[in-house]
Image 1 (spheres, each protein chain N blue to C red):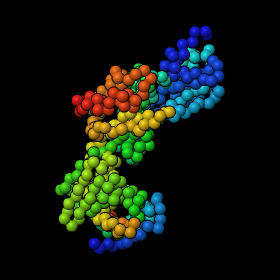
Image 2 (cartoon, each protein chain N blue to C red; image 1 turned 30 degrees about the vertical axis):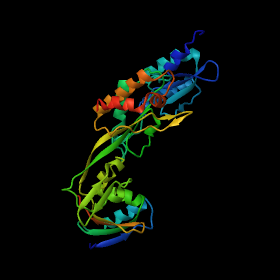
Image 3 (cartoon, each protein chain N blue to C red; image 1 turned 60 degrees about the vertical axis):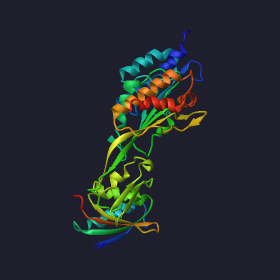
Image 4 (cartoon, rainbow over the protein chains, first blue to last red; image 1 turned 45 degrees about the vertical axis):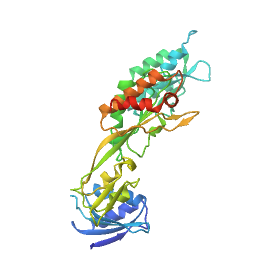
Length: 79
Length: 287
């Protein structure tokens, strides 16, 4: 899968994880794809729900088997 | 006042204090909600008749300590005028506790406050051979600790997967706290093991394709006990999908306790003695 932007939020903790993600998405155009690298545990448990609440659509999730996951998110994909 | 009926006072929420001729007065609350008007009344009564403070009880109640025997009637009258009722103590259905539930909490899956009101209306204060506690928590996060109660109620989502809507993105796999879901993206297949599901609704709340739907339901636990002896409420029933059935289950459970418990015997002990399967069979008849 090809992304338009990429963001790594493995170096921050909740709630900064979602704040960084939100700012990144705000700076993108509707329909563009953002690749997100995030940690297992709290981030992967909570961020998908928050993205849905904000109207962004997750289109793929991969377990990187190193304690991180990669999400592909379509901006405003649920709006 | 020479003839004080302590049993009658205890029934009405007057808890005898160590200090002679003083009571700590328990007030009625349902699901931990108190209005500003009630708070004002409680403030005034505690200042006029108590020592100007209240105690928040371990089960979401309020007590006004240091009410003198001679003031019992006046206190009852002034509280009633301000919309505050006496609480209960002793061998009866106690304060019904509840978290804020789906009306307020983003995690809430059931309207705990409405359910607490309904339960109080139907069962509040009912007399038994021993005390009986009901607690209601809105979701599997279990802030209200349902399993501590003789009968605990926990909100849940009964998940249902719609293959036609699924985009096989795989997000439900890592968000599921009990690893009940596996997805094979290559073959476009999904496996869900309901026995592992804790009904938290994480799949439903995260799914970008609305492939996971769900109906809210009630997970009931029975026989919780947190006193000198401790027992964690057991889940012996399937999740219940509607309030009407839930109330039937509560009614059968309370009737069972009323008819089988010995004086002073908590529900967990009754169930150990009479048999959990006896109650389970009685409930299954109405499910």
